[in-house]
Length: 227
Ligand SMILES: N[C@@H](CCC(=O)N[C@@H](CS)C(=O)NCC(=O)O)C(=O)O
Image 1: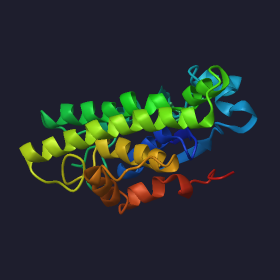
Image 2: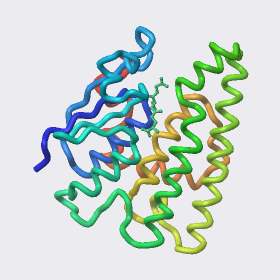
Image 3: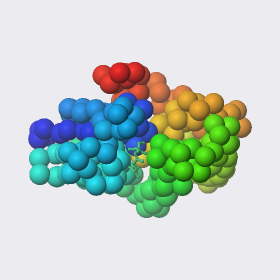
């Protein structure tokens, strides 16, 4: 039985999207609190929110006296604190070595190499401080996302050569890599990044998006979507 979990996030935040998928895979109920990242200059900068996370970024998860930012740490916390009721063996971060470390490294490839370069505040800086035109800004975003996806497609193919085919990124059950990949691809499609060079990534994302845990976490299925 979980204490009351609250997730501070935003429908389009890919980092909050990761946590929503993790909570759903763990079958944990939670209350969503929306932090509008754009309205009035962005509610993430409000003093009340900065009390929760001085970095002014979502997500933040509150679970009793535990208050955490950083989506990957939140996912690890959920994995180590809660068993999924209907499937106690299913973990967000695989247990066996070397799979565990491969999963963590690949999740970081997405969350720490691809995602930060196209975050809202980076794009705003390009536009407001460096006076980049929309075309230049989009060129930046496409360049870094494509470079990241190219590397990931190669790594996923190499993994299959060594360990055999799998439905999801690394095995036949979704893990932290899939949890990071799906929101990143959502982001890419939102900004018209050409995903055709990545058939493996596309098939993994299509498989994930059949699962209720992923469907319920989709941006368009959140109460604050388009508000
Ligand atoms: N490394 C952080 C990244 C958090 C992050 O960048 N959040 C974005 C939304 S995806 C945000 O709050 N952006 C607000 C802004 O850039 O002002 C995590 O994984 O939680």
